[in-house]
Length: 552
Image (cartoon, rainbow, N blue to C red):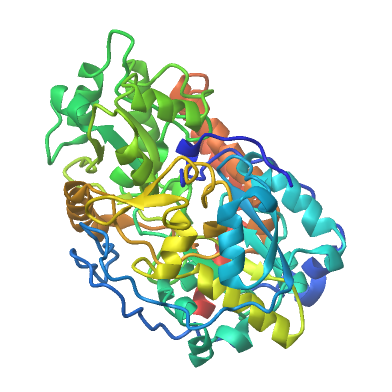
């Protein structure tokens, strides 16, 4: 087991961190030259139909979802939980699994009642390799270069990094799941059929085939989380402009408190500000004719850098924004040292459940720029995906039944077990019926034994015992989701991106961070973009365009 202790507050935080380039896995070089290096591309391939979506007929939400991407909201915990799985999926065998983790290492299976309860429900013995997020790239490089016979049965491919030759590795070493999941075939796995099509699309095909199971995520991505009272005291108002935002941030800074928090690798939280300026930070847009355009060459991104430079010059950012970890910055948000920080929208729950909090967490509404309303970050709807090792048909079906169980939806008995453990052992019931983890449940859970990164059903808005929080989050989504700014490359294949994406991303992020920090003049940005294009950016644009054409 490989794991580094991390605060539970890091749960579901944004994966936008600085990455380290890795060498290509041994044994996969040949894959990159097959078919002219386009073996993983979808261009010119017959595309497997996506799994046929069939929604779970469970408890009706109190707040309705929308086709645009607003999540269903539950103001109270469902009183009558449904069964989503009809039988025990396993056969008593041992299943080896591996996933990323944002928690501390779990207790061993022999002394872990949560682990034991899940094994009993699944009907298998689980050997779990837990990899801390900080070690993930290094560990995956070892796994990808190793003996294919030693691969775990189930592998989580985390979306936080661009793993070199990731698609080639998956295509060569993982089972092609198309015969099991494409079209109506997915009906054998009802919880996998309940995963919306948008998650499969953003995961993408490889060589026209379906190799993974996506971990569905909400449309809102990187979000500026406010201490609502802090910002209201500084003059925040709905319908604010970029100049209003700058004025509020400046007024809210002083006496060793800072309106804006940011962590190392986040480029001073440029995701939120890019979307407010109408672009997706370092992403791609696509023209009507299918041409792909890099956001970094868009004048609006450069204007955003200048705006953030102004915020930093005004002293509104915490001075450690280029060095402090996300975990430590979240702690400063909790204690009131900073009035805001950028984090994934999906990380709302720990912010509301923080013990002794004296503030109201609130996702910021975007400001307008030059009279144009701002947008929010449209996230990739798949937080990575899960693949299974090549095996005989019966073994693959068993592994898919296990993942089907783990993908149980909110409002089901299986979801409750995987997320809270056993009633009376790991949790008790609050007056409204919500599970409340006890002391054991705070140690034995799916943060430390991260089953949710193997498979998970579509997420719903729910904060135990806080119906007003759910209503506020849902209302925010209703206002902002229609204005989400998406990265057009999600779900598409690019040979250059898988080989050089991490290195080229670092070039852009380092320069952008240097500009905002005042170490690099803004005039250097155009030269950096030119270098980025020459080293592979233009090739990525061509490859994404070809794959986009094949998928549309």
